[in-house]
Length: 332
Image 1 (tube, rainbow, N blue to C red):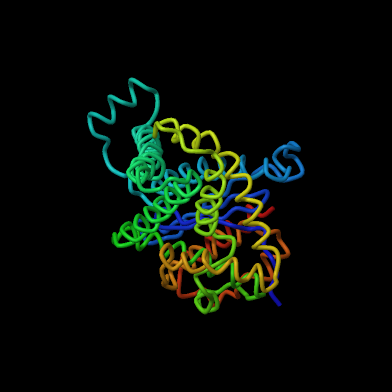
Image 2: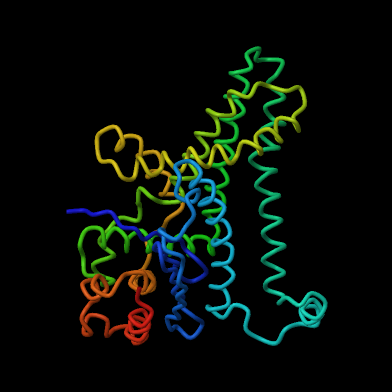
């Protein structure tokens, strides 16, 4: 019988990050082929202030936290994988001397700013510019807003399709699939071995891809009520100001669809589950072992013992046993 898990995660560079209410664990396959594990204690849910747990408000804070943790996890995983090994260049040394921060931290900051700028340009400015071209053809304010929302959805699908064709991103998406397979295996009561995990689907109802689709759809409905200003930049600013409302509503919808099992919620989950075909790939057994290592580090001692395979079953990966031992040492 399937049970819900309080562990979620994301793919990172050559690995997987898993989070429970009180632990974040990142497992990465480094340049030597070994599994490196990094475990960080988190504040338990009971310690969070009321507004972090209140319906609708919690979605806004979780969305912001997800962005911050996502960027930090990608940076940390690149370091763990050994992507930044080697002698720093003269430019990197100069930047470190002048700013007091590493070149990697500076690059992450610049990348985050550029990424946010690209997101605003693609999903807010471009739909508004294209939507303005429809103004002479559509007299209804509501229909104009819906058309602009349809353009945004179309850009979103094309973006995922094009990005998913990049070889490095396909490997990243395979680790995303390993994350989902591991959680699905656990929720179905499996002992977590690569062979057992590989049998499960790469799709999961609590996936961030489903959340992004819900955000897109909810934004269309909410933005449709804002009217249609003659200046496109005023419409962009209005939509950016409403993002916290969209995030709060979308998070509650995601939780409702993930936690309820009935024909209606199953039907409403299907578009998001189908979209995950674009953001996940089938992982290999070594990728699943990495995801398992991260997942086990987020469990309490009893659950970890129940889910940990016997030594013979992990003998094909010499580093897995050491990583699993490290997970046990960092147990909640």
